Amino acid sequence: MSGKTILVTGGAGFIGSAVVRRIIECGDDRVVNVDKLTYAANLANLAPIEGHPGYAFEKADICDGGAVGEILKRHQPDMIMHLAAESHVDRSIDGPADFIHTNIVGTYQLLQAALDYFRSLDGPRKEAFRFHHVSTDEVFGSLEMNDPPFNPDTAYAPRSPYSASKAASDHLVQAWGHTYGLPVVLSNCSNNYGPYQFPEKLIPLIIIRALAGRNLPVYGTGENVRDWLYVDDHADALLTILKTGHAGETYLVGGNAERSNMDVVRTICAILDEKFPGSPHTPHENLITLVADRPGHDMRYAIDASRLRDELSWEPTINFEIGMKQTVEWYLQNQAWWEPLLSERYDGERLGLGANGSKKQ
Ligand code: NAD
Ligand code: DAU
Image (cartoon, rainbow, N blue to C red; front, side, top):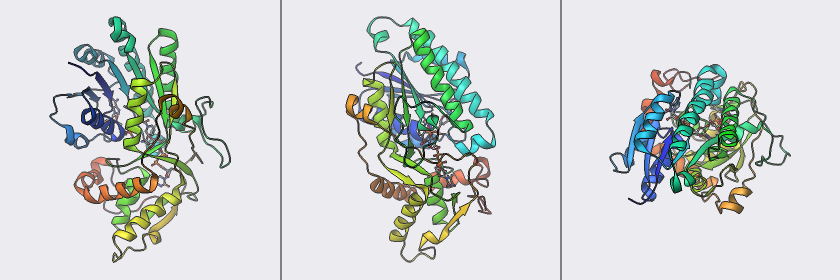
């Protein structure tokens, strides 16, 4: 059989599921999805490829090294792409323990299992093996408005429990590369948006609250800047890095779309105004409410992705305005996907998406 077997961790989450769908839809590679199915996971994200002979699912916790080792032995992957993580900054502030456990201890357990497995390989399969660690631009800290963007040599300066836990995982991955010779590659990406994003994150939260005519909570002054990348572009970049990236390298991935949070929220409001001119909530901008700031809120992230462009010929293809229209459209057409996520089980009340609907006012 031609093609590779790629083991993806966290493949039932937002970005992981985009990667899994892309692998199955775009080629003859096989994929093994290892996911613990936390609150952020949703097997409905994988409905488009469910039952495909090239797709296998293994419910497992990456913190359980024994279970991961057994899965590696059984599926004999050619490459590993590691996305499983606790990913939401606000949750890391309210309760850091799960972030330390999954992002640091889990990455350590996965690295150990991957190293044992790598040592069992030989010949061309060993030569071609890769462990790709998927990380975030937040490990580099916070930029001022006029600072140059992050580049692969920017010093680490994480400032939230989430970004500190991701920085620790990056260091572990680099150490397993340098010390034990595990062929690792890292990527640090900016903010993703698009279909299937859990509605605690800014963009889906604002879309869903605006549709319901609820206040649109913008932290602090709304001047904080993020660089936004459409999730399918990120999935494409990740597969490019996995297949053609050089072992030991770090690649920064960005969308060339720096926007303030206020701009992002206004863009969503304008799209909804255009779609629903007769809505009682039009103009949706009137729903915008400045609320208490996130503690330690990073001011700005920005990415210099020239290494990825120059060495691996990758650039984003979906511009922010088009991507945002597609995203709003997707949430409008897929209420059956997000509505169940607003329940108690998923902390809908904490998100302000449950019954009483207030958020940080
Ligand atoms: P997500 O929260 O949507 O999904 C995370 C997935 O990991 C879920 O399916 C969850 O069940 C799984 N998981 C969590 N703990 C696990 C464990 N102990 N064992 C096995 N599986 C576990 O996250 P996302 O937004 O898709 O992010 C994926 C990765 O990309 C993360 O590593 C994140 O740090 C990184 N990243 C995210 C963004 C972004 O904008 N969302 C940007 C850059 C980097
Ligand atoms: O930069 C990459 C990171 O992007 C990833 O590593 C994280 O996993 C991902 O969650 C994301 O982190 P952010 O904290 O930037 O994303 P979030 O959607 O939570 O917030 C985006 C911005 O919007 C941030 O400046 C905080 C602000 N915000 C967020 C929420 C939820 C608000 O103003 N109001 C809100 O209600």
